[in-house]
Length: 114
Image 1 (tube, one colour):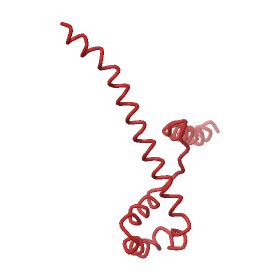
Image 2 (cartoon, one colour):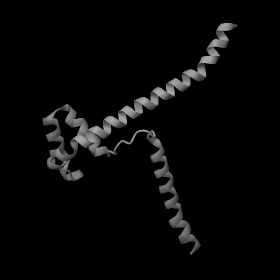
Image 3 (cartoon, helix red, strand yellow):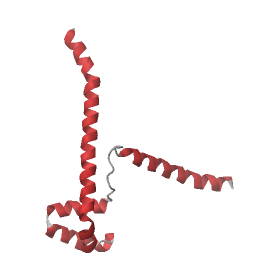
Image 4 (cartoon, helix red, strand yellow):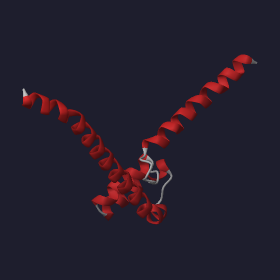
């Protein structure tokens, strides 16, 4: 009974940790939608043009269970979510760079005064 409890508890703990990590990955002020890798590839092909998109969906539709109808209905939502995620990533990188410069700046001032 104890082993069964441990067998069930460990995956639940792992799932909890992953959910918490993904929840903290996005900036708190930004609520971007989620996009899976297939949806990301569809948006990339759509950005290349309609013929590229149709070709990709035709080749992978049976594998991924997608159709042009689903793509037509959801493409704008997926594109908006990706744009939001990209903007959030750029903002986060800018914040990190600003924080790094603030930390590095006192050292440059010290070395300049010597």
